[in-house]
Length: 104
Image (spheres, rainbow, N blue to C red):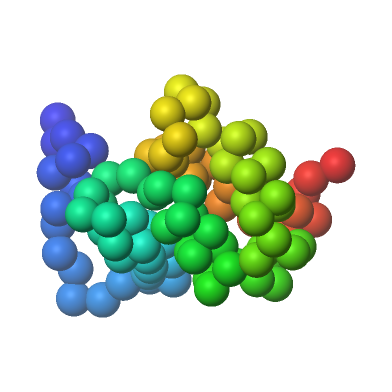
């Protein structure tokens, strides 16, 4: 049986739309997260910069520090003041659901 990790490492000559979208999300997370030296978590400042610059049309008042504080608190499951990719992914899922008309 081929492992999931091995499947992810396979390089295809082209990428499908969803694969490209995932690659962009991962790359953007790492780019913004690495501003303080660690590409594994987003600090509050990195998160605010990412949201304000990359999601201004999907997050209302994305440059408002109070909005970022509330958003960060709702996503930061372990309350360490930083967001892992898994914690950040919750936001992407919520935004996609709302944008696609799937949320109630």
